[in-house]
Length: 625
Image 1: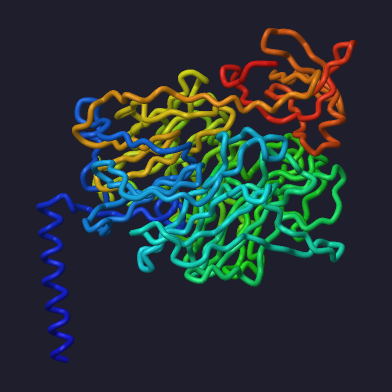
Image 2: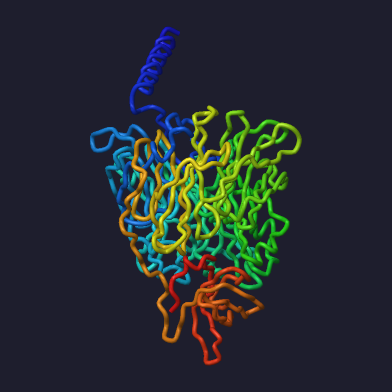
């Protein structure tokens, strides 16, 4: 008993000393950000921000502090661990992963690069299916890593080009050395199709875009496709490995196990614009899937869970819940993926339905779901077409808020969950986030608990032009939808691929990772960012003799013939047959842009070998050839 009392006294003394240090030194409110969107629910909420408030985040008192040079584009959210000893000195450390397969450990205040390691040659866009350019010129570390502070490691998936083929490796790196703590694992998997044949995971046609999840002692990763190309081969996967040993789980999840498809078109990708799978307190894993066969007749709750929000057991052996919108056939037909956005679990809510989830995709409906029984959906207001994902916080009144970010809107919704059927009601909207790519963007939220005047929504817009392709940081007052601050925060290399940038907010600073740079904002910074010249890499496929590249807006699509309005106003007829046979084809939709590559015969008809999406804004289009 005496020993216990002494231990308690020592602990109390330590707590007092820690409190004194927090009150008097730069260690105040030392928050770690170890996973995408702050936690496994994916709320994006830092509720322990004691420095940044609505009154001091202004153009006169807040701005750019540091710019850190990196070696490539960054699609991953930066992560943060405080109080690490690296190279003999203590640092608060930001971890940034690039598409060159590099991982950086950077001092969180000064921007000094402490360590940099490289995990292998990335895969060039030229070696992707259909030379997919919905990314930078290299694909290396595409997803946000995840950190285990107890084990002192960061888990990272690299995409490497070796032996003239693409391969994925899962790494477990020491936080203080960035060296492998265990031997990296070559990612492989297999599963049974409906005809009893074995289907093998193919790294060459599957993109690992969603953020990694660490839950249940397991690392989870979702896989989708590259530009919907190789649709006859690519299928969605959710895979898992034991943390520490990197031993694969006995079970995995293939989202589409059919052995045949009407149009030889499978997919059902898990991509969510980079948003990570979520995990509940009970250990279930949640994700959203995307489109499958454009016939609209391929959905099946057992064999093909396309266009669905899903829950699966921690060991990936059992589907525990599925919500599929009633118009899923139409979503498939128009490639209007539900899975373009992520699923967020809400912290426990009052009332009969304590466990809620929200998800939204290209169609723009913000579905409010019962996380315990996904077939129950309570509300679905229109929140704007979404290549994005939601965030959450509690206001000063203690009521939960959902932040949606479809189209160009920061929408804040109050959650009514105390009595009867849960519902959403709009509280505020800021409607002027820059976006010239696909609709939507990503947000984070900071506040000092529920203290009034401290809640801030942070967002990073998408570029509106090819040159200059800048991205901006925004701070919005969610109480009234007023803009507090905005400034250029970075740049983007290839505007044909969305800049799914998530701002990371911690300890009075805001971090934005973009192409070849990390910018750090905070109190006392200069308002204007001086950025290096934007690099340009021509990522258009090499043309065979007689081939042309055309960007335009679809006027009509009937069967295997489409009519396109070219950028200069001319009208082009396009035969889609070869693109369909090549499985490098996305069904053209009237009113939306496409990229078509092929030959043009004497009659003026294009015979396309590739037909893929393009951004609807012509300023985003590369030049025709």
